[in-house]
Length: 507
Image (cartoon, rainbow, N blue to C red):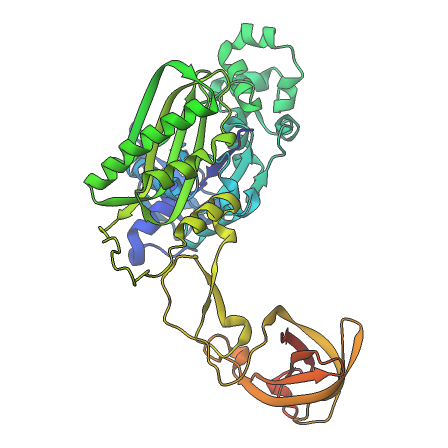
């Protein structure tokens, strides 16, 4: 089933202007409006959240906004720069999220995420990550995902706070309460519908279609069908000028898996020739299938390191054939390297005694394309004394960071995600417990080693300035060994809560 993401940027013109101005931009709490000309009048074209909260509105005369809002900053509106900025944002989303992305002017993007969400940890994680990345860049955003472009567009603008995921196959139930403006109809048509008493989309859905079409023309019914997913609404994906892409049109539509696989292999050969001519290797390939019913399906694969191995890329793409629904047939196949990096020539080993380092990138690529990029990682050391901060996740084929774990004191083979409180009997100030209770089981300590004192990292936050942990390795009567600590030095209450925690289990 098709899944479409609509990204809504409610203050895109002002956010873009602030990003472009950098340090010269007005502070975020300062109201900002952008003005343009409507005939001979100057009117507000865009306003940020602070200006809107103070009473400014889009379409308001600029003079009125200056009087109404104290400390208002006024700049000229540049619609062409906004459109170019949206295109650049679409290219960023194309490389990161899905093969079919387009600008949805004047204030958003549309992304066909069918079959791509699992690469980002699912729909909810994908939308949350998208919103977080934009927010960290100073761009306010809301997003919704639904079965059609029209439904996602409506939900992103009138229901998402800041994200909304419509249930698959039941998009009509979440649309009925939205206003008519969510259907992307002309303003005069919406006003005429209001005169007749229609306020919500549900009001229109309850009416017979013929009288509405007779009065308002076919556009109203077409928008309703597109929003409900009954009528296809193709997305014309954005393509960068430097994109390496090959296409094949078919005189007769194709649909058999074997036929699709054969043509994929031929396209990969052409694409790799183009990559070789530019000295590049592909890190991400998008296969787009244009069906005869105007629907578009896409397959995306990624590899850990730049590759132009025909056999390997063909295998990764053909593994995804079962996700393609050819319908009444595919009339065009296109294959593009949406992410390519320089690939140097490498000499093949010829020495009989030098096997070199084993290459596991092929296995990594297979697993990543099956389970998702977020679920395959490597643990890398971090230069810190705090145990829960000493590990971070890096891509499986990322180069070594150069950091190593310190080996002065042994560390448990299993570190709990967060320390768990335990009940203990221990003598103060620096003796290990005689016994402790963890997860309802009481354990008597037979041996103990410690303490290993770890101090807080004061440069991170003030609360850690005097924080101390005293760690002990303990062994119970059953021979099981644990890593426990007391929060505090046992004397000074400012050094910690003096409570005991279990942080890890030794093998």
